Image (cartoon, rainbow, N blue to C red; front, side, top):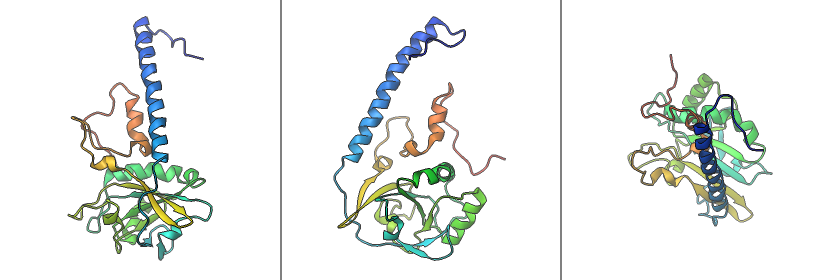
Length: 224
């Protein structure tokens, strides 16, 4: 049932709101259409190496790429965390994203495998995660393998990039199915090159307000 009106609103407001509602419906339809096209992509390349990662959220040890798949889940989503080996602190924007993902990880784990990979040493990842209060994310160090470089989460300059990649396990192997290549696409004039807003609700929350996202504010590690 459509909303009639809110207390004390003007006819001008209601007219503009109804116009906006049509655009919101079109946006929802477009989001669902893009998601369908994403699901319909043919298989990407077969995984060429069973990368070995150091674990950062469990007892010290290692885990292979294939072992990231639970027996009953065929999809694996990997977020590449911008935390370089030589840095004491990671990217604050990535940290903001992972603050949110840590909360939904138990829900996501009902349907998919989810992991976060960074080039920083496992112990440094473990320490940072403890300071943030992360309890649910599966954090892995790729310090000793080429995953980041191979899957476009690292530039030739060793600069880390916040790439998200999706893989699927089939009977004949593990295949790449999707990567957030929008990260590398040319941005429209005045638009920031964000590419994972669908997993980063902060900006969508700001979009609901009169001041919007703003031009100068970005997440920080803390706000003291």
